[in-house]
Image (cartoon, rainbow, N blue to C red):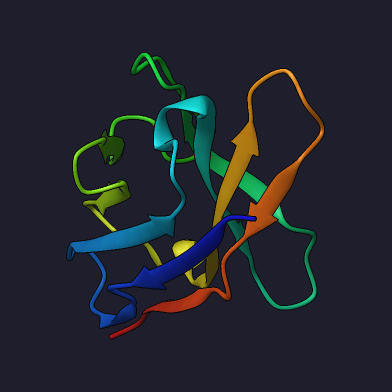
Length: 117
């Protein structure tokens, strides 16, 4: 079972930056595709970015060019660098781990990101 712990959320002004981190307690981090999702009040949870074990990435159109997902296999951590933040980025951000070739997945507890002046 994978346990995920997110950190790095907070309040930031429009145009600012934040970096989210998600530490995974798992023996084989490399067999998981890692992702970041977000859920704004009254909206469904949506994919923000995903990164495979090999480093291939995919982003939601709304964050392309502003957000960067990365992973550190030695630290078993996935990051989301968020630049040029907008008020519409305000949401709870969740880390996700999905085991390759299975339906198993795990979620973190979420971290709040608020973009406001």
